[in-house]
Amino acid sequence: MQLEDLKKGLWGYKKELVLQYISELEGTFSQKLLEKDAQMDRAVHQAQERARGLEEENRALREELDQFKGRQDQIAKAIVDARASADALRAESQVQAEAERAETRAREEAARETIRQTLEAELAELERYRGEVAALREAIRGALEGIERQAEELERQVQALDEAAPTGNLTLFQ
Image (cartoon, rainbow, N blue to C red):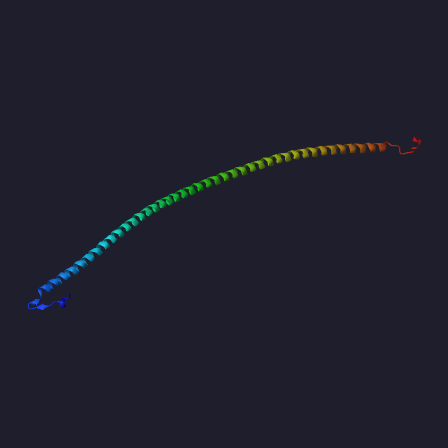
């Protein structure tokens, strides 16, 4: 029923029709309220379900976040460990390089010392040879002087014999 459908009486609208109209409106409003209540209940139920789903998702995301934080901590520790290992390796390689340099220097020094000793021995050998050559030279000079004296002596003897030799008739000696 519509407000225009209400019949008017002498003093205005008829009471029964107004009451009927009001009761129809009340029924309509009650039904609409019930529907609204049902919709609200469904909406609340959906909202509660959605809230539970979001809480569950939030819990799962927090767990995942905790896992990621744990992984992040592990990665940070791994990076720190890697840096420490790199530093240790760097220090060890520096120590090893220094040891190798020291060992190389020691070998070079030993080689130099061996070369120096060999050189000194060879120089001493050369000096000994020089002495022997000088002594041999003196011996040869002495021998040559002796031969020279003998040759001069022989020449004097030949000259003395030549002077003492008869120059005349040598037929007697045949």
